[in-house]
Amino acid sequence: MRTKLLLIAEKGPARDAYLEVLRDIDIDVDCVASPDEIGGAIIEVPYSGLLIDVPTMIRCECVDKNRVNSIMQRFPVLRLMYNPGFGGIRGLARGGTLRDNRDLAEFVLNECVPFAPRSIRVTRRQEVIFNVLLLVDPASLDAGAERTVTINVSEHGCFVFTAAQWRLNAPAWLVISEFEDKTPIELRVRWRRVWGEAMLLPGIGTTFEAMTTHQYVQLHSFL
Image 1 (cartoon, rainbow, N blue to C red):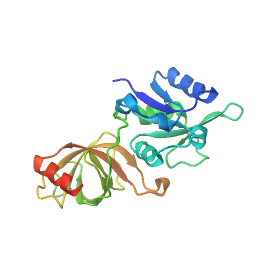
Image 2: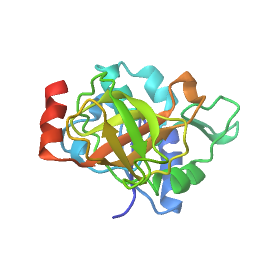
Image 3: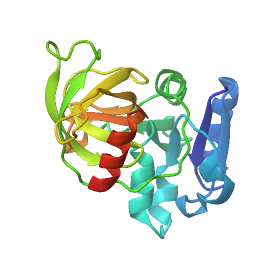
Image 4: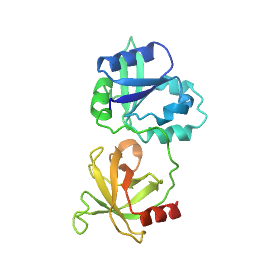
């Protein structure tokens, strides 16, 4: 499957400049003029990253900013500014400062292309704290397990607090202490937040890849 990105930018020179870079590196892209246009069939399209024009976001009056923030948490995100008289395109990744200039092409190739495509549809997350064992290998239950907690949970996945270095798309396993069935639950790492980034808790955003029927029933009882 080809890499596809979603670009949120008003029509104009800035959007044209971003699209020119993406064409040069042969990346598919869908465009919307504001976050409020994220709806309909576009919700079901699998994307590998979001590109957001900062002036567009400043000028727009989002109907549901919480929803937009939830969507941004699920993808690699690069905020963009365009000034043809002062450096052209500047990129600001999540957790970066204005002094950091992330190259658009480099960000796409290194962060978005390896990212497994997923749809924008967001399931409702709840702040459910489970005591868990986070495993690299389901056979390493007695050794190498990290004792930690979930920060939030939905029926499709969870955010797990961890400062360990996890690769995108890497498999992981979770044993939830509050579940009667302690079979390791298979996860997939979909995004990550490193220690010190944006003054938020570090960890990994994961999807549930496999769990037993009893575990699924218990999950829904907690949600």
